Length: 110
Length: 161
Image (tube, rainbow over all chains, first blue to last red; front, side, top):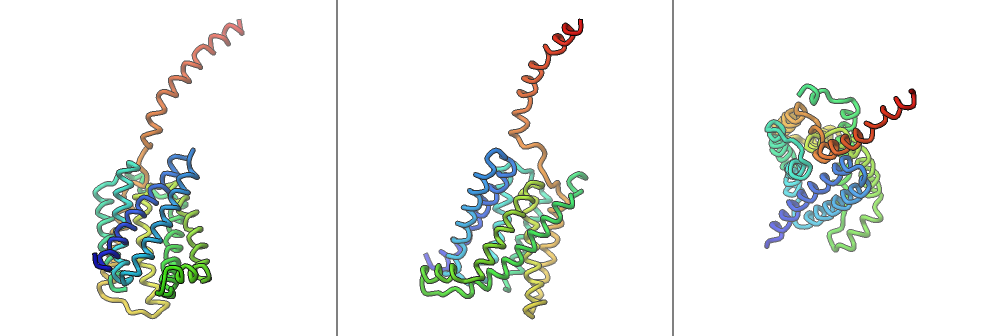
């Protein structure tokens, strides 16, 4: 695997990890009895995300890595629906799609 | 639907603070990572530990976490998270205003598209109704309470007579 492909893989994995971290943080608001456990788990997972992303920057230029991070909006929405049972209407999905395209356009030039 | 559109002030402030903190974080993060030595992971770790910028990052992240948990108390994750994409817009705008960077036409298109996306999300319902666990647990509890309550009026009547 080329260094660039490995870097891209790390960033994509980091966006999935972000999805799980955010899901755990939201869980803390739902499962109040175990609130602190969910927060700790969420924070631990988000620290892993930061490490993965920082690692990816050793193989990739920021201008390549940063646009990929907008995938985290898709990951968070998918996991909110699958794991938390949130209602994601077509309009909300449309919004997330626009955000994915828009943020990529903004940071692709950065 | 109308209930979801009427967003409480607390939530609006929480989302605005989240975007502001995210903007600060992204700007600081950019500077911090650019300063990191490329030689080895241990050198980078030492640089992270000794660089005051990373202390600032930690303070911002802690504030971000506290605020974000409050936001998630009032809204769905899939409703709140998309709003944070507005920080890409504010970072871009601040780079132009403060750092004198030039903005590309495609970036302006990107800003418009992001704002349109956030608008789409903002008009959807902000919380999914009752979580499944709560609705399943309630009927059994109500039946139990009813069973406990029923004999009481009889005992009171007997006492009065």
